[in-house]
Amino acid sequence: MKKLLRLFFPLSLRVRFLLATAAVVLVLSLAYGMVALIGYSVSFDKTTFRLLRGESNLFYTLAKWENNKLHVELPENIDKQSPTMTLIYDENGQLLWAQRDVPWLMKMIQPDWLKSNGFHEIEADVNDTSLLLSGDHSIQQQLQEVREDDDDAEMTHSVAVNVYPATSRMPKLTIVVVDTIPVELKSSYMVWSWFIYVLSANLLLVIPLLWVAAWWSLRPIEALAKEVRELEEHNRELLNPATTRELTSLVRNLNRLLKSERERYDKYRTTLTDLTHSLKTPLAVLQSTLRSLRSEKMSVSDAEPVMLEQISRISQQIGYYLHRASMRGGTLLSRELHPVAPLLDNLTSALNKVYQRKGVNISLDISPEISFVGEQNDFVEVMGNVLDNACKYCLEFVEISARQTDEHLYIVVEDDGPGIPLSKREVIFDRGQRVDTLRPGQGVGLAVAREITEQYEGKIVAGESMLGGARMEVILVASILRRKMNKYAHTSRITLSIRYNRLQIPACGCLTWNTNSLLTGPIS
Image (cartoon, rainbow, N blue to C red; front, side):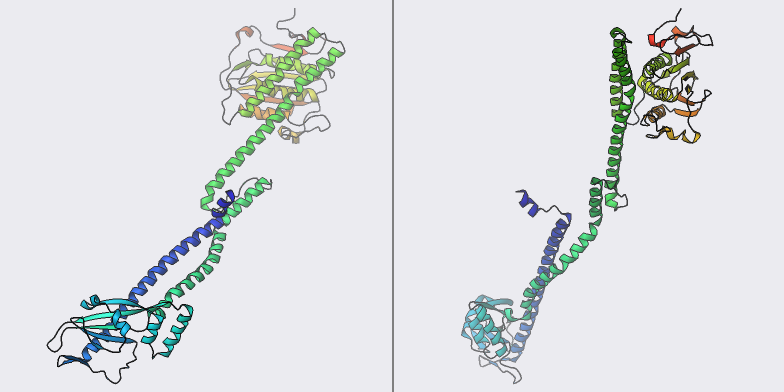
């Protein structure tokens, strides 16, 4: 069934165009040809009737009525073998005079024809027509050819009837003039045969021209199909917008769809990369905790809260990145208020476990009233990547400080590592770009941090630290006025110095505690 449908309704636009156009040309050619032929036939009949009427008038002028008899005196120059035959009847339909004696022809004249002027046709077989034209050898040869093709063929003869009223010298007469040459043997009848030949030649000439016209007209569609194939083969990214006016809207919408799908694919791929990168820290904490359990440095009761916290963190990260992947552009950011100090405290505690063997000393200089307005996971992701980068490249010390104005939140992370060359301070925020390729990493963390920061209309500025290493300043725009935390109002500043298994009193004399114990109050 499908094959039959494809046969009658081809899928190719070019074949459809050719068939439809050829059908239209054929119908129009037939219509125009039929109109032309019918018009020619009518004109030919009128011309024939006019000629036969002239012949009738000639014989009327030659006729004389003497002694109640009709006499027709033919001049010597009138050929009796003329292509017409004249019959003259009286008003009662009686034959008064005949140019020649042809009995079969006289019988074909209908009495009703003699009552008024008219143009009629009579049908005769080939043999009767041959008797009528016995003296014309050329016509006899043509009739012989017709007889050989079809012995039962019939010939058509035109008949003109003219009625002349009675006058003082002539009674009422009816003159019948018969065209002895049949219509089938006249050149006018051949027009019908020539019409078939011309129509066939027209189609044979028009179809190649239509093919060329279809090829030229459908070139933009063919080019579009070629570009689609190149898209499928990954040899092209977008369709060429320079096309015909009718296809411009289609190509523009397809390009938008391609861009949207490519952006969605890139977003999912980037989100997956970011997710795997964000899971490195909790997985490293779990690995470090398991290692401590194996070496009996920690008990199960001590390790269980840490592991549960990191498992919860992994679950939160997965949910967070799934949410980011499903977000559309322009999605409103969260306007929740989060104190910065506890968030950084948890981050430094986790990083301390990751870099336990390195012995990183992380100090925080954070006022408790400083807060962040937005998604908590966004803040943790940004600062987690920045702090992880600082801990990875520092020699020993990492310092974190923060300040807040009515418009911005500034968080500065400094380390005593090798620092970042001036020429690389912008490159490091691009995905896959790393200054130190000897250390493990994928060059994703800072890129993720910058992308999230830009969502908050902020930025990250890389510079040189007073400790001799890198200085990263995270600047976030405060979308709403920060709220004061009443429970921290009596405290002006808390400095936390983190080092495993060692409690320190810094030189500034500020209160400190070991964040590994996750204390929530001051140490006495």
